[in-house]
Length: 222
Image 1 (spheres, rainbow, N blue to C red):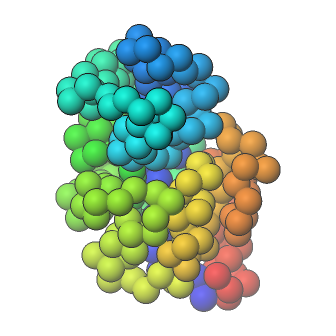
Image 2: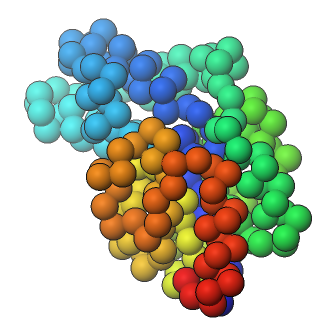
Image 3: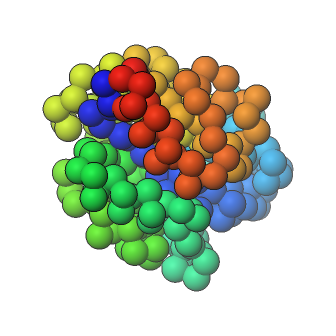
């Protein structure tokens, strides 16, 4: 059987936003007195909802981030998106193929609805995603690695978890997909394969994804 639903992570999978947002997050945390390198940000926060940033800073320092932290950070990120953001290489081709083959798909991101929409509008991916195909951790209250977001997306799309495949590039996202009982294809363009343990398949180029999905359908297995 083929998958009945392909669930895409957004940042790093569809839009090449992780270098931008993690650079800005590291700089802002350092500015606030919490020295953070770009590598630290990738390791600790890539794929996570904003509440994880607040929780880890509080846990490590005993200090709370400013109340306007999220607003200031997102303003900086959105401004940078307008200047720099591109779609991940091959993402448009993948989406066009899925749409042409009538394979159901959606996006389920730890980012806010606003962040998803800004990224899609800037890169032109908004033509592939109407309101019913966009899901955010805002919808469920708990971000990855909790499975809630992926389960919510599957339910709203009318597909049982075991007939879904998730496309992820972060350890937290892979953990969430596994916890949801879904197969997960780990995208290693930015994350070393060794950090995506638990993934059903690994691939390094987005152009490989269509072949992986078609091979799964040809085999008649998930």
